[in-house]
Length: 230
Image (cartoon, rainbow, N blue to C red; front, side):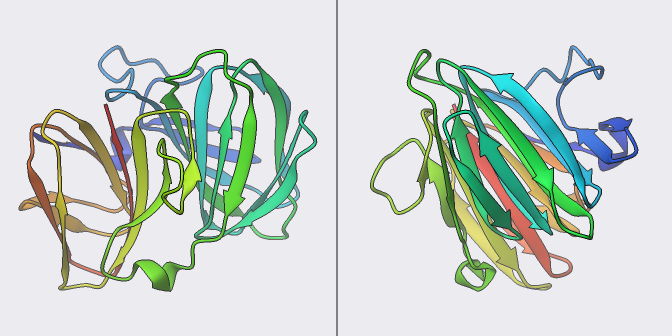
């Protein structure tokens, strides 16, 4: 099953400094048919104005992945971590028993990013944070693992049975990915693509389950972010 969730149908909240689109129910956006996808609970498509951001706020027992599309985000938390994550790079935070963090766009230009929440498999774990650079040229024409629940795989580690992957795809080319039909995959492309022949437009959500493989064809040059979860 491949279900297209058009960008225009997503939840929308514009706070001036923050222009947010919600793939799943979040904050004041509620749709009982879109409470998540498997263990994926939140996928927000955010544009954050320069010199603004999220003031300190708490989280617990959630795996939070931030994929920066353009610009940069600067993180600071109650564990003493601080770091700047730039375009194409990823940061992860396991909220565990509880953590307070702030996310600021200290740049002069807008920052765009995906923030993805995955339900934890280790409630009550110690909180943690990490970030890594992932040069886009390293994922040209193939999916690169960015974060997962498996330690030692060269990616960031989260406390969930999930994989977060990224790829860049040239127009007219294709990527093939083996899939487990029992799992829940969610894909967001930056430009029009076709997934097993099903067309998706820029920033649409593509909810996938029951498929054994995916053939993703680019109609234009596209950046792909995909989560594979239970």
